[in-house]
Amino acid sequence: MATSQPRTSRAEQRQKTENRILTAARRLFADSGYDRTTIRAIAAEAKTDPGLVMRYFGSKKELFALVAEIAPDEPVTGTPEQAAEHLLTSLGDKLEAEPSATLAMLRSMLTHPEAAKEVRAAVTNQQRDAAAAFPGDDAVLRAGLIGALTLGTVLGRHLLRLDGLRDAPPEAITALLRPCFHALVDGEAEHAADGQR
Amino acid sequence: MATSQPRTSRAEQRQKTENRILTAARRLFADSGYDRTTIRAIAAEAKTDPGLVMRYFGSKKELFALVAEIAPDEPVTGTPEQAAEHLLTSLGDKLEAEPSATLAMLRSMLTHPEAAKEVRAAVTNQQRDAAAAFPGDDAVLRAGLIGALTLGTVLGRHLLRLDGLRDAPPEAITALLRPCFHALVDGEAEHAADGQR
DNA sequence: GTCTATAGCCCGATAGAC
DNA sequence: GTCTATCGGGCTATAGAC
Image (tube, rainbow over the protein chains, first blue to last red):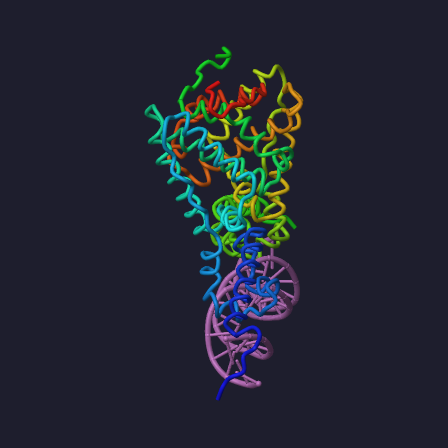
């Protein structure tokens, strides 16, 4: 009547397998993007079989949606100067280490429509409330530019691994971009091509 | 002995078909990236059949390599201020209209290794000789940042189509980025997080 | 030369054995 | 519950009919 009690129960074993699958999926999606990552490869890296992956997570699309995510940024508030510093700090964090869940999303954003939607939504969100903290009537454009610059810098560091960007200390990069961000927040475009300020 | 002379010779007809294939391939690669673009779809859009596409261009990889390209930027020279203005003008051109050959490359750069190599090479090239025109010992990093910012802005406009960036006049964007570029060229990082300049 | 038919492969997903 | 075998379908690439 009494069932034997193994050292690791079935439930525990299943949990471990699920976690191995999730970790493998995150890594492979981040490395190769949605299309080039196969259920078979995920199963192999997680040391299980493709059938289990499908059984646990339903479909490749669902698995991607589960492991790829962009952590929402903290809302931007305060004076323009505080907003700029906040955005710089946030960029510094992304440069320090971007979780592979985010890299999976970024890697796929140009070719997987679902990922494109997520990235657009994340940037647009941040853009909307950043713009509210900026003076001037082209605040949305300037906030969008900050989003684009941030994205370009993160891409250059983690995905394209450009010279210099690849291994510079995050503070060196944010220090260099500080004048950029403050200029964009304040909205002081310079008009002359030849006069220097 | 004399062969009849049709109004459009076989050679002309073939030329026209090849051109239709090339145009279709550029458009589809730019829209959907390397993996999601199929030879079948290219043939359908060019109003031919997949066999001919393969016959004319050998393989999907070769066709992509033929139609996707990044036009090399003009070399950066002159004083730091001139270099900054040159890079801004170059960015303005890319914002005005990016050829679909380039968009095809950019669309695929995160998931197709060949495209990644090409984009890296293009950025690194520009970065190298830009750095030579900059003062300071972290010139390579600053030049790399300008490359990353440029890439982010172009991506935001043409591929992600972010609010504001999508339809702003190029001059409005370059005007806003002018202080950024000049600051990065000169290498005047601001150090204090709380003091404003 | 142009196009049709299909080979050969790998995929995501499923059914059923254990 | 876990895993194996396989289905149905899409792809690139090729072979052969016209």
